[in-house]
Structure formats: C-alpha cells, structure tokens
Length: 306
Length: 253
Picture (cartoon, rainbow over the protein chains, first blue to last red):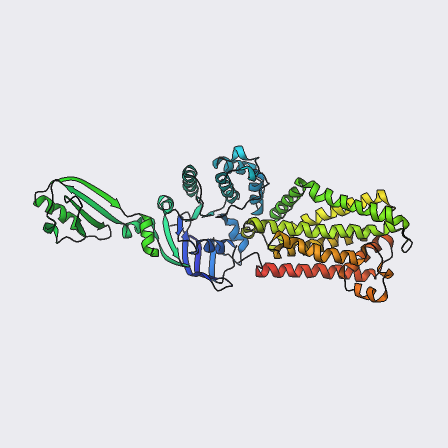
C-alpha cells in the first residue's frame, strides 16, 4: 500500500486583516495518486497549495512532505515539489530554454540538457526553445510554466488551475501529460474550476469551501454514493401511473407513456427489479430504456450549496 | 548551501545587464564623463587646488561613489521588485533556497554591475585628469563595501516598493542629495563651522571621505570612522533584510 507523501494536520491560515483562509485542514495525500481540490473562488485552494509550497506563512498546524516538516526542513520538502501556478509569471524577455534551466538550477540541480530537451519535447516546446517568452501565445506560456515545474524532476506536482483559459486541444494534451506523469510515479495535486477535468483524471476528490474541507473521497466511491441516476423507461402505450404508485421516486413522463425513475446506486434495494416485473405483469412492452447519471459537477454544487 | 541557485540567480541577473548594456553600463558612464568634462576640465581648471590636489582629480572619488551608490540601489531594487511585480517571486519563495542564498545571488550581481561601472569610470577619468591612488587595496575595499551596502539598501527598497515610482523615490529624494551634500564636489572643511558639524550627520560624508583618503591620503574625517560607518551601515541593512525575510514583509502573506 502506498504511503502518505503529504500529511496536513490541523492547518489554519488567518491573514493579518482577520480573513480566515484555511480552517483546521486535515488531509493526507497518497504517494502516486492524483487528487483534485475542488472549490468555488476564494474557497482556499490556492492558499492551501501556497502554504505547502512555502509561498504563504502557516498560522497554525503542521504540514509534512516526504516525512519532512515544510517549515523546519523546507529545503528538503521544496526540492520534492514542482508548482504550476495559476498566474503565468514569466520573465518576458528571456528565452524559453533559459527560464527552464533557471528553474532547474534554482531547485538545486545541475544542468541536464538531455532532461530539459525531454521535457520541452514532451510539452511541444522544443522548436520554441530559443523564442523569448514575450513572443509566445498564452497557451505556450502555460506549457512553459509546466516545463519549469517539471525541470527538477519533482516527485510531487501541484497544478493550480492548469487549464484555465486554454483551448480544448491543449486541455486534452494536459490531461494526457498528467496521466503520463502519474504513470511515471509523480503525485499530482490539482485544483480546477473544470469539474469534468477532475472527473476525467482524478483518483480522489477533495471539496473545499470557505476554508474547510467538506469532503474527501475516492472519485468512484463519491460518484457511486452521491451520483444519482435517472432512468427513463419508454413503453408502448400510455400508462396508468396509479398502477405503480407503491414504487418510490417514480413519475410519469410528459409523453404519458414513459416512466421516470430517480435511482441511486447507494440504495441497495430491489425496487428497480420489482418495477420491471410489474411492467411485464401489466402487459406493457418496453420500447427503450435511457439512463442519465448525475455528474460530479452536480454533486459538487449539492455539497457547496449553490 | 544551494550553490546552483546562487549561480542561477547571479547569471540570470547578469544576463539581464548584458541584454540592456547601454542602459546598465554605458548610460551611467556617459553621464559621469559629462560631469568630468564640465566640473573637472571646464570649471575645474579655474578652481584652486584642494589639499594640494587639483579640483579635477579631487572630484573623482566623489563622482565614482555618486554613480556607484545610485547604480547599486537601482540595480538591486529593480532585481527584486521586478519578480514581485510580475509574480515570479513565488518561484523563488517555493524553491529550496534560503534567504541568505537569495540575497547572495541578487546582491553579488548588483555589486558586480556597480563595481564594473565604478572601475570603468575610474579608467575613463584617468584619461581626463591626473589620478594617483595612494592606497589601492583600501580603494578597492571601500568601493566594494560601498557597492555591497548600497545594494543591500536597494534590495530593501525593492521589497518595500509597491510601484516603480517608489523605487526611484529613495535614490532621487534621499541618496542623491546626501551624496551631493556629502562632499562629492568639495571638501567639507570649506564649509562654515556650523555646517561642517551638521554635515557630519550625513553618513555619506564618511563614505566619500574614506574613499578620497584611499586616493589622496588625506580626508575630511578620520579613516577609522569612515570604515566603521560603512560597516555599521552594511550590518544595519543586513539586519533589516534578515527581519524582512523573517516576517515575510511585503513578500509573503
């Protein structure tokens, strides 16, 4: 079983003006997983990442990375981390290859041109290596900040809204890259506004709102537990809904010949089975069955109460 | 010690200087040469010698220090303010780099630039006026310490500043008047007694006097006081920077 590479215990952050950004955060992140931090704007996602990476001071609590305290042993913890910030902050007049090399050196690593080339090729930046940052498009700049974060071969990668404002192609490229990095053993912590992004690539979901973690769960379990399904059974004739009145969460479709059932995987009963038997018993023929699953986005909105 | 990081910061800063060579080096050198032509050659030829030193030669140490001090502040303040302005300071804060390593990287680059400018001005001046350096090692030491102390001060200004305008406030409104009134172009012994005493509260007086002593062997104030003043100033700046990083003042929320 993989061990926890990041352990956050009772972490709180209160700014000087009294704003509570994080309140008693407890979260363990397992080595090699992809965890998505979801939350509305101002929920505390970026503050949490900043506290782990050393960009913001911790008010109370403890964070360890790779078993080392992020305050006392900050050199060891930071060397393990690569950070892709939300804002694109690059020296505009430097060349792509120079800013990536700079990041590698900053993290205490000697020059390794083969590694830099591998990263730049992987991010489709190799042919832009001698371009100045100011000459690049927004999407390319975002690739550069990812290259910088990967330059020192981090074991943990924080991606703070990595696909914000990028086109669909780049987003798919990013997802493929993230999956590849996970295959290589990198632990990935992702914050995103695009819930389908978390749905697509995360192993675990943590929902943060108002500086508190509301829920942390394996994505599959979360979807199964809270993800409700809607089943639409189309029959061959208009139905008498009263015949099915003893079945819960059931209604008649607008065309009068459909039965709509709200069904949850978590509800382990035989109601669906009983319904199908009853349809047959009443001599209806089933023409079609459609299912619609509740998305992670809807689950998320239910939890944060929007 | 993260030597790779120190070197990376140093090289990064120096490459910025080389990219903007005219702005970084040629511009201060040209403006100083103009001072020499106007005050040293044109007006200076009509001035009396001061302590047996021709006026043209007399102003050399003051002019070098004027430029070096302003350039040190400007280089160091910009080097830390710009990452703050564009947000790339977060990369520095999240890297395994101690505050000491950060300061060494930035300050050594700023000092290299200022020292280079100072030495270029000295070489240029040697073509225009007669210069004899009586204590060359002390001259280099005082120049180096001046570059370090004012670069540290510039670093503080860069962290304190919240706009590009604020970066220029300290050098323009405080340092330039202090250097001009600190005896760059005259010996403070030429001032009336009262103003001589007032001038002694200007810390730059000790700097210029010490630097001039290294050139000509005589000074307005005792050389020991000058060295002490430079060291106190340097350590005070170091202390402030240590405090800034400890509290995260204006760099870390």
